[in-house]
Image (cartoon, rainbow, N blue to C red; front, side):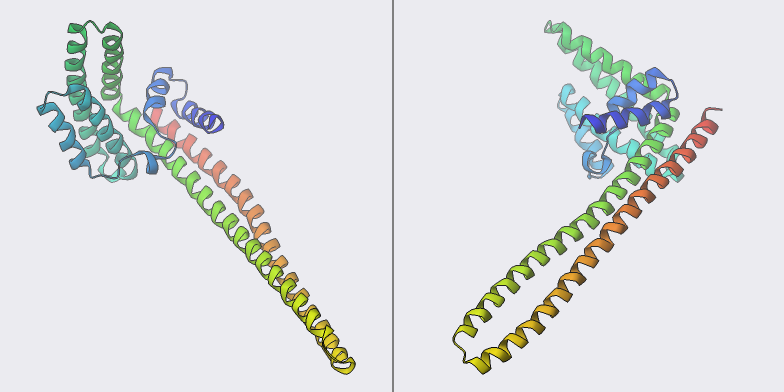
Length: 258
């Protein structure tokens, strides 16, 4: 996990280009695996759940639910660039609602004398004010980050599919080898009961069977080796694709900040 976190931080540092505040904020907001982490529920449904908490006066719960909605909205904005303007308005509205709910939760915490919690909520307020103020940069960096993560997850998925294919072939080879061994032993036992002439013919047949089994073993071995060669070639291709994406990303970010 630490290695993945380091890679995430390196990517964010690259994308934030020395903007420490942007890096700190997005370090709290973006996910290594957005598909797994971000809710699959419809955006309107998630928003409705947050609004229900507001109506019930449960502001702490509302702030958490608004965060879920915002995560969803930011991710959708990165995947639907043609609707960027609409999503930016949605995210800014969510930031405003989250700030309001957090302020209410902070007031309650202060009344209860929960100073540490109130201070934490104040930091959250500043966090969402920053998001609202720097919404263009937030969405730009999130788009580059999530697109790279999705591409990397695709590389991993293809790599795991190849490895699973190798494992399946190795398992099948072991199963067949075991079956061949059992059949060979059965034939050997059967030959013990044969007469001399029949045994001689059976031994000739055994030699032919053995040659066929060896051919099948070699064929299976060659298939596994071919997939392993493909894995090495694809791994190199993954590296080249990552580098190409990195160059394209840097050029895009350079144009965005100009």
